[in-house]
Image 1 (cartoon, rainbow, N blue to C red):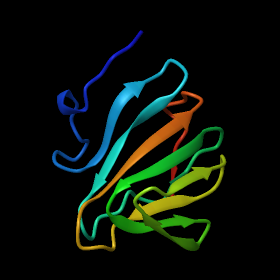
Image 2: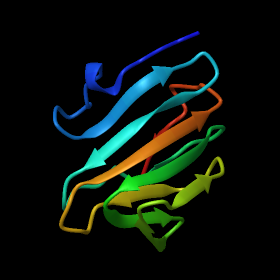
Image 3: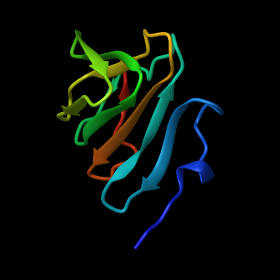
Length: 111
């Protein structure tokens, strides 16, 4: 068994960005907090599929050049090689849960 508490983990950018709650051995998962005007950063994975669940706020998920509105309760599952980004184009923080599988920490290509 593995246990974590979100409050004990740090966001990559201090007060926003990616926050890993668990890493490996088979999946990565955590939360993303984007302030208004922030984005995750365009990228794709060669072997990893990634799922995003919008916990709160509003924004947009960009997949292969297409823009999809994202709001609380939406889920997006991306296949490997699908180029994606998430932007907070709203006026409140955007918080998402992400799951990446399989666990391949180096499988990220920035675009």
